[in-house]
Amino acid sequence: MRQDMVCEAVFDPATDGGRGTRLDVFWTARLAGEDVTRARVRAAIEEGRATVDGAVCRKPGTKLRGGEALGLRLPALSSETEAEAGALKLLHADTDVIVLDKPAGLTVHPAPGLPEGTLVNRLLYRFPQLRDMAGERPGIVHRLDKDTSGLLLVALTESARQALAADFAARRVRKTYLALVHGRPERDGGDIRLPIGRDPKHRAKMAVVAKGGREARSRWRLVWSAPDAAASLLEVDIFTGRTHQIRVHLAAIGHPIVGDAVYGASRQNDWKRRPGVLSGLATRQMLHAWKLSFTHPGTGETCAYRCPPPPDFWRLVLLLGRRCQRVGLVGMPGCGKSALLRVFEAAGYPVFSADAAVGRLYAPEGGGAHMLAGRFGEAALAPDGSVDKRWLLGRMLESEPFRREVMELVHPLVRAELDAFLEANATVRAAFAEVPLLFESGWPWREVADLVVGVRCSLGTRRERLTGGRGWDGDLADRMDGWQWPEEAKLAKCRFVVDNDGDRDALARQGREVLAGLAALRRGDAWDRLRWLRERGYAPGPGSVPWDAA
Image 1: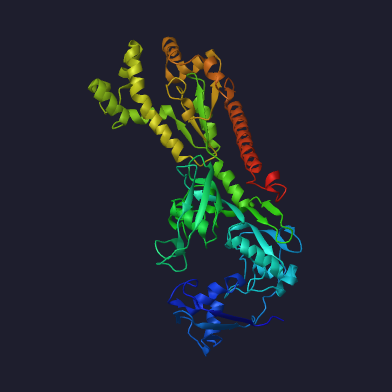
Image 2: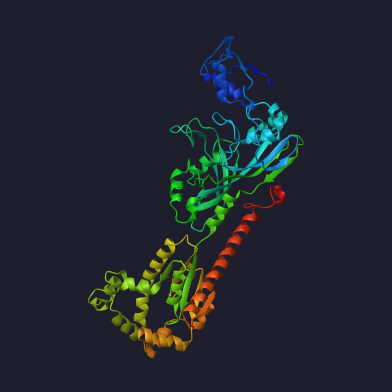
């Protein structure tokens, strides 16, 4: 049976907080090492279990001046925490300590209104000897938020608890977390030294405060950012153990944790409006206790563990690392690029046509029509205000300098439309852009395409399509070919090449083969990202391992 805790002390303002310290604050600080909560101290005082200079005192807010003889009798807890069966992922257990991997969503210890369903309930079922330990949270020497996953150290004996509590207080225990945060920091790392206290406007929250806060220090390192800078992965070391420290500190530097609706509410609301599957993920704060190093209270040896985060964490990193596969489509005039583009569109992929973009630019009130009219006068326009294509083509055939000048005017407009298309489809699996002059445009083509698909067919078939479908004669077809790279040079830069001498069914079949090849490349990229995560311990491996073996 547990006995009442009888405490006596003399209040010294020089060491106990100064004149005017409240009675409940004094006893809470004095009994901090015994894991006694302020609520329990207040309840004992209100029940008449406290004395000041021998007289019973029932007011927790009594102000102390100095020299008072104080007494307090804390009753043994009237109701024992219930033991409950439940999963425990133990990474280490001996007669003194346990190291375990706490899942997200599990509260560490009971609290008012939450007497069951906690980690402590499960620990008592597995380790009933914890009932002999002092304090209201047997064995717990540090805590993780309910929605934070990862490494937790638990003492199994009172002597181990006291030794570990002293090490935590003296900052001899090393803890490193993984945090997935909104945005991309401008620097590769930094130290955060900002005091933390109760938010004066929202008492249920913590905040960086100018007055009354407690010293708090965190150090972070940037290890990865998503291609679109939507989120970044940080390693965070903490040197103090303030409530919600990492969440408050990272929010204070402008990069709240993904999924944290308390300290990053506006960013999280923006996240939920993202297109694609990512908007439905990150339903908890993406924070994981990754590494833990401490001195074993029984043997004196240094123990170090590393635990990769759970699937919801590392899979989110994988998805964030996935970028749209930007595919350029090229070929000589008449080869069938547009027909292949329609195959990809029918398969559900977004597509862009440079020829269609030029058509929009040349339409009445189009940007191209306005620019060409400004440069060459009204002669460049048809009666309806669109570009006079016959006039334009005739001038381009007559003068190579004129043709180059037109290209210099129009190509940047097409590029702007292509950039807008790619930005609008940044979260899809793949997007296709038919740009006949992709290599000849003067753009660094890799800025708009990750790889290129080429279309080819025999010269006779091309000429037949151009004369029958577009009304070109042989001279015009030759001039158009001459404005482009030779077919061999184009196709040499293509990852996939489609032959289009057959019928539509043959083209569709080859288009599906290209899509399968692109999907295989995306899977390969995903495996590369997973391998990168595993090599650094950010994704699941054989379990918790010593740092020096990681």
